[in-house]
Structure formats: C-alpha cells, structure tokens
Image 1: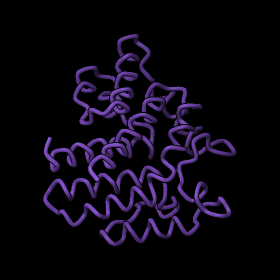
Image 2: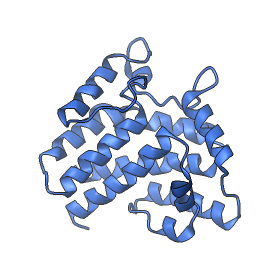
Image 3: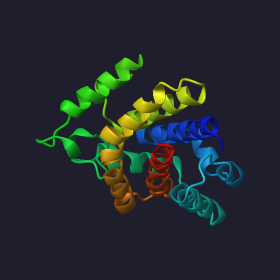
Image 4: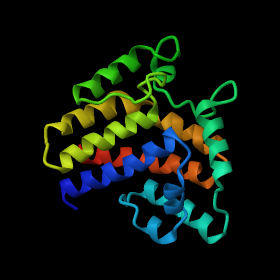
Length: 201
C-alpha cells in the first residue's frame, strides 16, 4: 500500500473512531458497524484493528447487536459519567499537574487546531476531548493523502505530544467498563489507528 493510500485509510478509520467517541452512533453508522460485509471493508489491517472488527463481526453472527439505547447508555457512562466518566475522554486530567479539565493541554490542542483553521463546534466541550483529537488526526491524514506533505510532521507531532499520550489509558477504561460490543471494539480500533500513524513515521 502506498503512503497516500495508507494515509487515506488512516483518515477514514480515524473519522469513524472520532464519531464513536463524540456520540453514540447514529442509525447509519450503527448499521455499518452491524453489517458483516461493511465490517469486512474496514480500511486498516493491523492486528488491533482486526481484533476490534472481529469482535463486532462476532456480535453480528451471534445476534448480539447493540441497541440504540444500550449504545446511548454506554456512551453516557463511559464519557460523561454519573459523577465521573468510566473512560475519561479528556487529555488534561491524565497529563496536567492538577489533573483537571481545561488545563494547558487543552490550550495547546486548541492552538494546534487553529493553526489548521479548525475549532471545536461546541465551546462548552474542552478541545482536548479524544473524539476531537481523532478528528484532527483524520483531517491531517486526509491532507497528506491529498498531497499536502507539510501536514505529515504535524500529524506525527500531534500524536506523540497529545493523542498518543493518553489514548491508551482511555482504551483501558473502555476494555474494563464498556458493556456494548461497539465500545469494547473501539478500544482496539482506536489503538489500531495510532499504531498505523506510528508505523508511517
């Protein structure tokens, strides 16, 4: 696979991962994640990505597909929490000295987005939400795939300084607490995206 093709595949996968972190999947995405043929077309082929896809395909084969209500509940408990999220989705609590939201990491991530003309759509949500960070990776990988080689160093730097520093912890939270096949698989799919970015470096 050529570098541009690989970056296009990373972009495509990172966008789906981003959507799952930001909200419970809409009916279209839920349908794709519960369709054996669609799952077979997942763009990344590394071991972790394929483990995640195998989990989803097994749920389809066994008839244990996640309902909209189950996914909404899982998303709420994992990323918003009743008191505290079970899979904290923000970078700052992992990396800042105080372990709080809206710390220096949030500002640094906001500045990285702004340098590429991007900003988060909801000002009440901190910029360092893992879903927005994966969306930024999707954007940068897509830029490289379209011939903008200048976005590549930014992609590597962003993953090494930000997303890659806490995504593994979020994945562990998902593995431990997710109750749906979709969110258990997300732990593997998210790590697969990062493994591909690092392999490109």
